[in-house]
Every structure is written in structure tokens, then in C-alpha cells.
Image 1: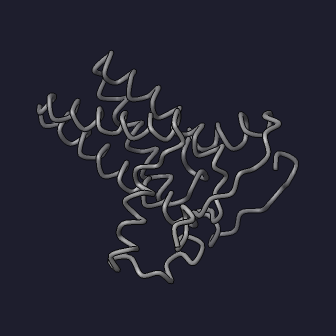
Image 2: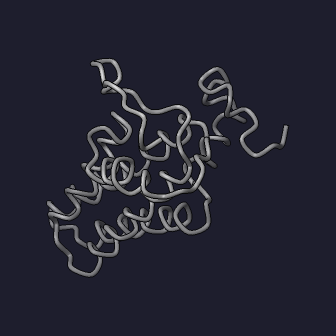
Length: 168
């Protein structure tokens, strides 16, 4: 993975990887945990900007425009000898979308003086990212599966997602 060189074209810039390396996803989640803890400890709105930007960038481009995504995929992950563990991309993108929504809401709340709401939203992101980072449980992926099961998300959105947990 670390030695592979690819050129990014215009269509690749705004695409999300499929499949996703689960190890990289968990490392990014660990970075999000550290960001959330930093926000809750310092109260710095600038850190909420960085958190929200990271999520929005990852939804739009995967790791391509996300500083945390770049750090993980280009610096940290290539130095680890663990094998790639492939997982479907659409549920991970959905999870990033939830993070983008919550962190953007936290930023808006912080900028409008609703600090308690901002802290609450950052705490929700912290809990979800902690589940991913430390337990390997992607809450957004679990919600994605429920939406597929109920027909809200069409099965053709992700053929590989039909049986994410081997239950069918």
C-alpha cells in the first residue's frame, strides 16, 4: 500500500474509496477522538473548525483533502506492517457524513454562543469515534445497515454491504 503510486485525476479527487482499509479508518477515528478531547479540554472554536473541515473533506474526497486523512494514509499507515483489511466504502462515507453534520452543528453552535450544545455535539462525535477507534464498531455503518434493511438505502448502493455482518 505504501509503495503504490497513483495519479489523482479530477474524477478521483471527489470520490470516496471503495473498499476502505479498516485499519486506516480506525486510525482516523483515533485522530478524531484526540481532536474531540482537545476541543472539550480547551474549548477552542478553531479546533471545532478543524474537526468539521476534516469530516466534510473526508465525505467529499475520502482522505484526499483531509489533513487527518492525509496524515494517516500517507504517513502513519504505510509505516505499519498490518495487512489491509478491506471493508465497504459506502457505510464509512455515510458515517463520515454523520460526523460532518454533527461537527458542523457544533461549529455553528459555538459561533452563535450555544457552547453547551456545541460541547454536547462534540461529545456525541467523541463517543462514536471512540467506538470505531477502540472497539472496531462503526455506529454510522450500523445505521447504514439498518437503512439498507428497511429499504431507505437501496441495496444497489452497495452490493458488498448486503451482508456486512454475515447475517443473510
